[in-house]
Length: 358
View (spheres, rainbow, N blue to C red):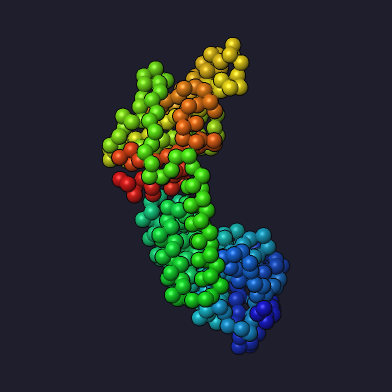
């Protein structure tokens, strides 16, 4: 444990310190910890702000390169240090401190990391793999880039496995044997194993030919998945009653509009209707009719403008769902121009996966 002590007022101590002035933080407790990739943490110091929001946490040991968490009341702020700091001075407002809106003195790494996080918060989610990679590469140290990689690639690590592994190699070269290096590489290895296990459990696997689906659309016209060979196709299992499906639809529409001219299509299979295994025969036709009405209304409401909408109106009794091993929705499969599966469930990273095969 680091030997640490805290004080509210300045001293002539020649050690190392984190001090600051936080507006509206009068009398709130400030807690400083060094945190790790395995979610363990090391206590550094604890102090109460004075009536003007001033605080100072001092320690005799030099700062270590790492990720730090500072709690001010209920607010939490993460930042990175490179171990070259002596006294770090911050000034900000309690209401906006989590957005990194503050003045920072005494740490190049803290300043750089804060600027990157502010840019991420202002710009919103990274839209393409290139956007994410550019943001990660703005990190000024291998450790900072590794942490940014976990943040930006973490929603779909399998799509960025090569990048994540390279970040681990860079971190190993910079700080071999450190806890950060060991924990990071262990985490990536675990993610890789889980991805392999998930892939092994899929009925339809990446690299296999996509089984054909040939069913009528809302107007009775038959649409065939095999008829789209030569295009890149998102096979999308959804339903009007599926909240997560409806929530994801706007992004699919946006990507469809953006890449349709380059050969991207969507083939939507609805699980509306009634399951013949669970619904009495005398109620089937009426429930299928009701399901069709809701299906058509959802297509119109969500502005699903592509042509290929199909359904056998048998709910979880859907034949295509059984063929593809669909047990929950939304469930998607990205199919390459040759008719082979190239990605399974590319929802949060659809555009990234699409760009790989366009």
